[in-house]
Structures are given as structure tokens and as C-alpha cells.
Length: 134
Image (tube, rainbow, N blue to C red; front, side, top):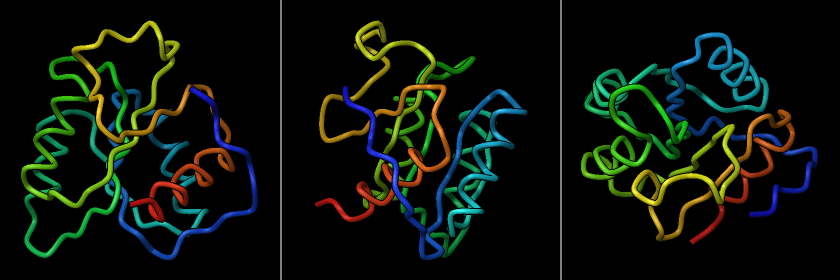
């Protein structure tokens, strides 16, 4: 899958739910997102992610989740989030090459993939594409 072209792209306060078990990486990605004009909720796992989604009035526009996580995989998180918030778009990220990710951890329908490591501009460009797709 092709990586997005980098560009000068800024968000408009959209709420992104970031699920990443690596604390340091989660902090860096959250910084990219905040710096890019997005609001961010952070979670390290399935339970934390669902707790964030279930808050009354929260409107999560994009779930940005690692594919491979301890416990429940990114796909399981995406499925649960989409039950609570069907309009939420999903972006998977992984350090594994796209073609090596087991099929049971991904969803085939209209999802997006970002290969780790990635730059802040590449992440923001992909999010802008995702937010404006339908």
C-alpha cells in the first residue's frame, strides 16, 4: 500500500482516538496530532479505548490504532468502536509490512494503513484524506 504524499496539512480540531501500547511512541504520535490541529484521546489497549468512546457526547472522527496489540488486536478495537460510533473512520498503523499482517487482524472494507516509522506530515496528510473521504 502506498504511503501518502507529505504536505502542509492541518486539522480543524477533529477528535482522534489514538490506540498504541508503546508509551513513548504514543506520546510522539499524539504530539504530531496536537501540533497538526487535532484533538486527541489516548489509549494503550482495548479497554481504555472503549472507555474513551463511551463518554457521553464524544464524537470521535478517526480511530488511529496499531494493528498488533497485546490482548485484543486493532481490528477488534475498530469493530467495538464502530458499534459505539458507526461514523468513526479507521486508520491502522503497523511496524510490520502490510502484506505480512495476518488477515484476521485487519478489516478489508474501506480502511487505511500507515507503515511505521512515519513522519508527522505523512500522518497528517493521510488523516486529512481520510477525513475528507466518503
